[in-house]
Figure 1 (tube, rainbow, N blue to C red):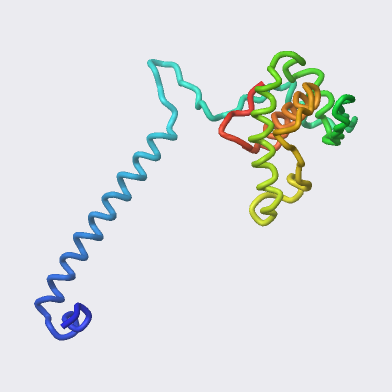
Figure 2 (figure 1 turned 90 degrees about the vertical axis):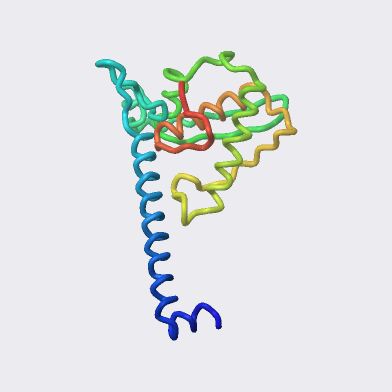
Length: 182
């Protein structure tokens, strides 16, 4: 006789099954409670003596940076490399000011660093362009055609990287495993 018919016709077996189910339910509830407590403990702020340790995943946006984000200035930033004939024009209010006043200066990062980060950011950006129901199509409008095999030059990589940092900080997005720090 299979288990279903045993429950219907054999009361002793059905009671035994109910007790086992209660144990399973209780064990499951206990595990869920432990999981919730562990997750709550991970997100709580840690205290060392009287000092509170900062959450390592939170972004710190300065007042100057907030002002730039809120400015309506819409001066285009043209990214071009004469040697490779590649060009990008960015029309995001505040980016021009942010790039010239807050971003790290040209030469701060190596070209290989910029290329590696841009490759990660572009892949995630393009993934989000393809998922307009999950990610705002107002933020991710167009696909970026970035080929890691092509040398776009330092200036293109520098400005593209900084746009990704600006974008993530301004719109509170995360395009990769790294915090978008300045």
